Amino acid sequence: MEQNPAEKIILALDGMNQREVFDLVEQLPNLQWVKVGLELFVSSGPEVIKELRERGLRVFLDLKFHDIPMTISGACRQAARTGAELITVHACSGFVALKEANLAAINGAAEVGCKPPTLLAVTVLTSWESKRFSRELGITEPIEQRVEFLAQLAAEAGLGGCVCSPLELKTLRKLFHEPFKLVTPGIRTKGADLQDQTRVMSPSEALSYGATYLVLGRPITKAIDPVIAFKNLCSELEDY
Ligand code: C5P
Image (tube, rainbow, N blue to C red; front, side, top):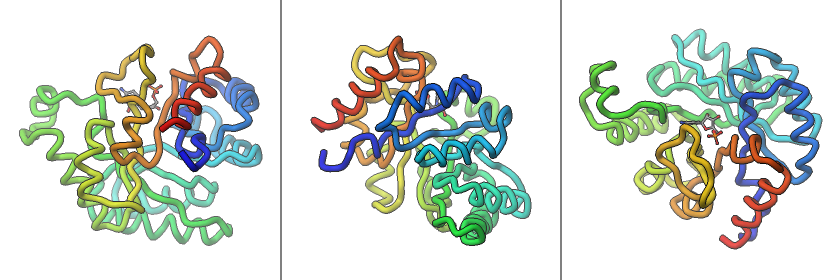
């Protein structure tokens, strides 16, 4: 790979407090991207984003906003003001909400001199399984079809990408070309513990199917030696 492989990897900072987060990222000098999720954001607030950015890291703010147009726009404007470069919203918020949120994020970033962030649409959460999906939500169409439909809605509303499972990459990449970003969790190197991930793919496979960024958490954060785990992951991608 010509690019620095670390530019493709987003480290999910789940299950750690602020101190543990800073201890970890300081051990990984080549790390470029981190994902701040609900747990860290709710416990530490926007200050944690500022501190991560001061350490030279790029931030994916994964708060999965889902609300009415006015509220989601306000949240996205404020999220963009933190300097986060990727921000998630639920596609189910609808066309108007997505469009207004996107514009609000662009404006919010401009207000503080940051470059406009990319809003990423969350389509169907990876924790849904088809039987429960139809029984509990009353949606009978296959999950894959729903994912495509919602990704299309997001693209039409002007969003810059979506989050998808590795198994949806191939189909979505055929429908949506770069610069539309496809960001995928569910990445595991060969022989790794799957934890609660069920639909997994190796890092190089996911890139070959068109992933823009790979989100990995526990394979690094819970590794006996996170430094070696991150280094091995980068080497695996170098050969890609
Ligand atoms: O499993 P791992 O720790 O690598 O998870 C990284 C990210 O993937 C999590 O922050 C979460 O957003 C996402 N994830 C997912 N589906 C799961 C487990 C995690 O999409 N079943």
